[in-house]
Each structure stands twice: as C-alpha cells, then as structure tokens.
Length: 402
Image (cartoon, rainbow, N blue to C red):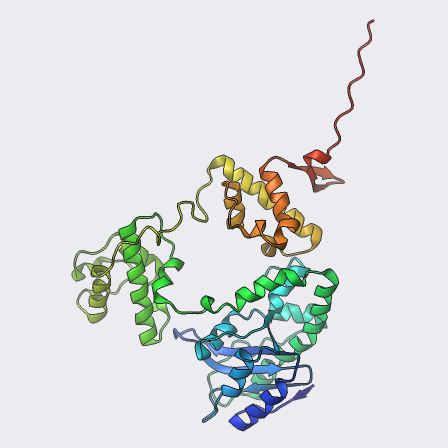
C-alpha cells in the first residue's frame, strides 16, 4: 500500500479524494482534542482504501477540506469504514450538518460474529492481523505543530490496518449470514439526529426522578441554559455545572440569586455575577412540561417489584445462554432495559420483538415470560427447553395386590 506524505494543501487533497472516489470502500479515522473544549478540535484526518493511505492536516494554513467532506457525506457509491466511529461521525456532522453514508463500523460488526461487546482497535488488529500496535503516541497532543513522524505513522496505521481487516470481516459476515443484522445498527450510527446539539433536548440526558411537570420544566430550561453557556465559551458543559447540580436546582429552586451561594457545586461568586443572573432567568422563564413531553409512566429502569425482578434475571440468564450458543455479543441481541420492560409486561415497540431479533432471541424470551420455556442442565451446562418438547413422564405401572 502506498503511504503519502502528510497532506497540507487543497490541491493534494483534491487529487487524493478524486482517486478515492473510485474505490469500493475507504477507511476513515480522526485525531482530535476535546478535554478542555465543548466542540472537539479536529487535529488530523486519516483515510485509506486498499491501495493508498494518507494523513490530512486540517490545521494547515489555507487548506480547504471540501473535497474530503464531499467524499464522506455526498458520495453514496463509496462505503465509509470506521472503528468505534461515533465521535468521528460527530466531528464530520459538526463540519457539514451531515453524516457519512453509507457507513460500516467494525466494532459493531464484531458483535455479530463474536461475544465481544466493545472490542478495542488494538485488540481487533491483533485478532485479525496478528500485529501488536505501539500505543505510545496515542495520548500525545495532536494539536501541536509540527507533528512528528512517529505521530503520523501511528495515525495512518489506524486506517491501513483497517483496510486489511474489513474484507476479512466482511467475508466472515457473509459466511455466517448475519450481515443483515447490522443494517439497522449502521443506519442508527449514521442518523444525523444522534449528533444534533439541540439544547431543548439536553435535559433528556440528565437523570431525574419523578414526573413533576414544574420540576422537569425547570430542568429542561436549566439544561438548555447550560448548553448555550458551554457553547458560547467553548468549554465542557460540566465546567459550567454538573448534571446532579442542575437536577438539585430543578428540584429545589433558589428563591433569589443570592441563594446560589448555598448551592453545592456552584461557585459562591454566582450570587451576584452575570452567569448567576442568567441561571436565575432560565428558572424564572421555565414552564411546566406538557403531558406529551413528560417521561412515560413506565420508564426504562423502573422498579419491577420482587417477582418482576426475578423474571428479568431469568431473561438475562437466557440472554447469556443464547449469546454463548451462537457466539454473538449479548448487547447486540438485547439491552437490559428492554428485558426489564418485557418482564414488566410491555410488548409494544420492543426491539427484541421486532425484525431479526424475534427469531434469534425474542420469541424464546417471550416464551420464558409466558411459562413456555424452561432451563435444564445437560452435561453440566445450562440449556433451554421448550415445555412442549419435554416428553411426558411414563405412566406408573399399576400396583399389584399382595
């Protein structure tokens, strides 16, 4: 495979992208920094097909990334390969308002052919290529210039190895017939709504007990206020206020700005500064949530009661057995929340009762809940047995008179 020198000009980038636009697939990775910022700072982009690879410097003076971004989000003929690509896709979305498509994630794909839940890239490379990756450059400062040869070599390796692994992984998927299992998962990864920074929905990611409309209305307003503050200052939202602090304020709102000095997690200076004033305005302008906005009455993770919890535990045991039997990651078959909802009596809109999951796991899970499936120990291992398949005991011989 041909490795190009670091690309720092628009012309060189356009030439590369013109060639890559003819490929069946391209592998993509990014290096970025976000420890001290709200928006991730893109520092390097690596890209490869089966013939050539290059690293692109987005910080190079005057470089225009349009040829690359067009290839990633507008060219539907080229499959884009990532490994654990959620954050990479987020960066591309932030730059374009679109996501790469079509898309394939090797970490997700591994869940369909092994019991690996979240296999790391170095483990993936070792498993498929027998190579050990030098992780020394992994935690370097990618924003500093000039980049070292070691940094560039390490970064390009992320896509050159992936370009060799993907065809092998694809063949395994074809052989097992599980490729279609991943269609919905890949579309979910490419869904732009996953990456939109909608401040009005930020409250949904904060844990808060209860369905009190006024309290949740305050939480919604506070979460949106925090998003705007963090975006404006380009600092992590946790540097403004932590989730638990917002939840506490929403539950016990201060009556005056001076009371902010008593709130755990806030600086005492907020009692009379501008950010404290804006926080109080968010509370004052909040409105109770409408009935349509309130969380469902049977939220995910709701208490099941003793019997329901036991049923959920049995479902989780069933999940482990099935995942082991067919060598697939349990997380791909079902989530714990869905199992608890099934145990609680929910049957509608459950992923395990839809699509391919029904035949692979969902029907057995439903049969277990409805008493049609039992566990048995065969040769020292737990097995699942349908009640209808258990042979009836032979009738007892009639007693003879003595």
